[in-house]
Length: 150
Image (cartoon, rainbow, N blue to C red):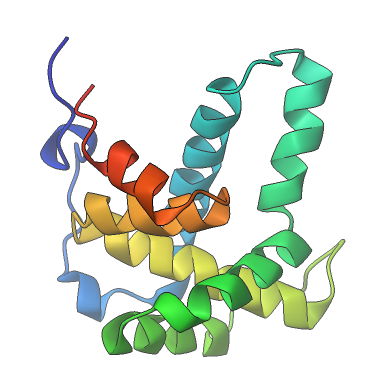
C-alpha cells in the first residue's frame, strides 16, 4: 500500500493562498474533512453496526459537540491557529442554523474553519494531534498514531 501524504489527499488546490480564503470556504472543506476523520476513527473501533456508527458520529459532528471540542482544543492552539478560529467564529455564513444554537453554530464554524485551514496548509500531523485530543488519546497514543504511515 502506498504511503498517504498530504499531497495524495489534495487533488485540487485552491486558486488563492489559504490565508486569503474566506473563512466560510475553509469551514466548508473543514466540515467534510472533519466528518471523514470522525468516520475513520469510528470504523477503527470494534462496533460497526450502522445505527451505532451514526449515533457515535453525532457525538462529534453536531454543532454543540464541535463547540465543546473547540473549547477542549483552545489551550493547545498556536497563535496562528487561534487567529483562524477567531476569523471562523466571526464569519457570517448568510444562513441561520436550523437545529443548533447560534453560539454553538459559530463555534462549530470556527472549528471547521481551523480544520480546513490545516488541511489546505498540508498540516496533516497537526490535524492528527488535534483529532487525538478529540478522541481522548494520551500524548503517547497520539505519538504512536503520528508515526503510522499506512
